[in-house]
Image (tube, rainbow, N blue to C red; front, side, top):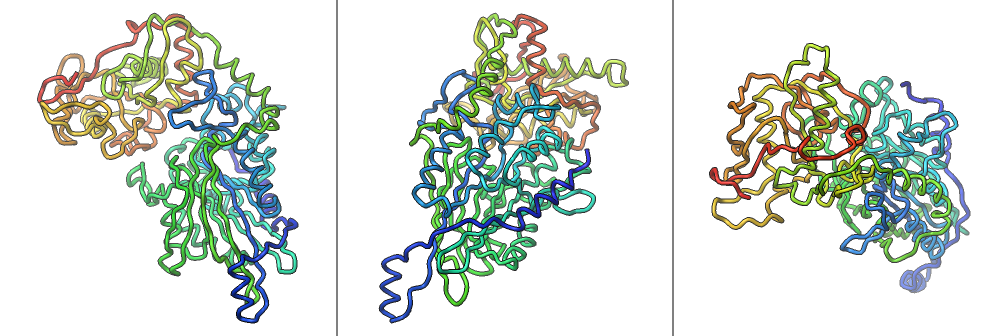
Length: 603
């Protein structure tokens, strides 16, 4: 669909003009005052500013686990949700003075819970007379000043994102989200706010928003030909000098990009996925960066800019509204200008406060509707299915995913030239705690199995390509010599590979010999009881994340696409179970693979 240029121009005008708020002068520190007096000069004007930040909220408003139908709990005692963040924000505003604070987010807001799924797909905000998105309601009520775009903002398509944008009373920033035809920003690049200081010129704070270039891969179906996403360093180098020339005394970057300098999608793009640290290091003129995307907690990280020698302070609050980052700025007015004297970052924990009743009351109706939705019974299970051992054993619960995908793709290809080809199917053990209990099966049970909003794609692959795919996947296991003790807690995630980047492939039989070095582990690979023919063609049922290159698995991204759809795999699973009525492993479970060492099964 065409991008809404009128809306962008309107928002750009607003954000470019800045917002003037009354501020209060801050008393100089005792040390600074003594120094001034000692010199016999006048005390310099000083100002304290606090920038608060969240990131990767992923639709968490309540401290509630929709998959368990209970209050959220974890072993670390964390609490989640914007209702808790609201309480923390209110406390900071009272402590610092609301007119001396700014509230930002670094992206991934509208995807991640059944709450956000419901208002994107079941009762969509894009429908005529549709609802206001719960995240827009909550963030408006809390009073966010600006939010950077995350990659998951694009999961439901541009139309949904634009509708969400129209419901927000704050700009969605993306200096490196460009219109593919004009190469001009498709969203406001920056936000500027003016803070008035008694007896001194105002302080102008600019916030530059940057998003993740991986969007071009992960949501290619929605953005290809419409939007393009150049690297963060490149666009920061373009915009930061502009913001300084516009009079910005403080420049903060809100970046949906981790700090590690690594990528999860290989070399498919010339940009680094997690480049916030590189931005700090390479681009002069930045004072602080609110980091997102990586889902790690970084209270404070100091990076030296190689061109100026100045320190840039980074902070990443824990995802799901579990933490709030604070950047405390001290500014001094000397020689006719404001300069940043110091920046200190810290985080505050959501588990230290209660929910803000204003937020829980505001969204109670939406929450209750979604709780009822996910607790709908869609079938019955003959036995309990669990992912507890799914990382290292072929578990029937993952076979359910591959079977559903296989059936959907076979039905879609009926009547085509590919209908006679065998269908293989891929799935990953996303969760270590998912369980479908014996007895009634609900939507939330099935949703907990497939926590992402992935959709299904059919690709054309050869036997040789599938073999390479399996070898790449098998790198997930730590090399373990024959006869050595096996600790299942240390057996997987080699090279810090996450569970979602380990794939089962059903429709074949194979062993993974973990005594061997990575790259030579797949043994006894066969199809229909016969050694796999490298030239044989297969239809490969795969999720859109993997099909577009997520995880950098070989061949699949460049393979010919035979079919794709926009219905979520999670929905397909629910439809399959509803149609069957009974969830019986005899109808979908198969032992396709096992771990071995020198030919001997590990388990």
